[in-house]
Image (cartoon, rainbow over all chains, first blue to last red):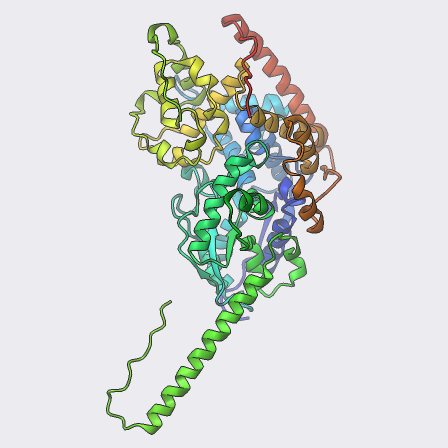
Length: 346
Length: 212
């Protein structure tokens, strides 16, 4: 393989609870892509739940302690950087490390859950010293910044030519920007760039960061149905073959709950919702069995076949056009008034 | 969206300490909100709220504690962070919503019963297993929510795609016990805090409401 060398990088890896169950394919494909691109992942020993959204809606110190325990586990194993595929875990871990790093003494008007007071309260719940340095980054950020698009592009062996994809980032991969410190909060492009490197055609999807209904699938199904329906409608009107995601909750709402969304909205959307790591793995030529494609409720196969058929047809047409032009050139006098070359629109 | 139709006796309804309490817990400069509505414009949940988010901010500014803590909106906020990202005055609006939810819980409000049931069930699952046991959480929610059949149709696709795990994936070491201990300590701290708050203001008897 030519091109830039792959990095030699070892990071702590925090799978997150969903990735042991409903999002096992995200875990599997994240590990496979990292391994193929030279990133060694070492699981955070004895990791536990980060607290996710429910913890911070109840208490910020409880949320802090649940997340900090995992940062501490990583730190004790010798890692300052923890990577996780899940945006919700990422937000929980980053919120904790952000507050733990605050040095300023709490002044009047400073929030109760910041600075030394945060550390004190979190340590009270942890019953041991809170971590000092460890912080978290997303697998998406590691792949785009540590591995880099150049190395990724040169590692692609099976480009996804012709596959039209809508990149859907969800709410919290990039927001709030001060905390996440990654990509653009209104128009993120990291996943676009990964998918372009994979050879896919990225459609201009205006709902990149609109909410899918998050965890309301259980308590308020009606809200989740309304919000996910518009994401699907928009992807369809953009002509996407697939919505590509980076969040297990978004994936569940758009894939597993598709029947519920279609039923409420009176639609019949069938587009698959793969994780970006599954498409990257395919483009890298990794075995499908290691990417968990069989775990997608809406199958990816038909979209790949449709894209391939469309691509074959386009190639055949271009071939025929070339042949016709060659025939005209050979037969007709070269007066320079021949038909203008057809520029295919990208 | 609901517009208050009854005349409001501001002098009587206002709690002069409320804005300061929210400011203290959230660390946000609440007075700098000038009601531009950018938070509401970007909020995906505005159609489901009883007060759009900029009005929740206004309730806090006015010190209308009862209305702010009893509204549905604070339970339906998904913390998507669009408001926080777009506030021209750099107010962490999502954090204010979070803090109001904390206060509402402590004061015994839960107008969105299902949301509270889900959150409590989630954390109970974490406290018990150290990690979320998805199937257990779904089953517990189905029973407690009074909507046992809502997600029954998801069982088959989950089963056929190998996503149904009937046993929890618990941490391999001390993690489970450590997480249980974190929750136990939190419950003690919360109980102390609750006692302290009961002294300063009488706790409402039951404000859980019907919910959906």
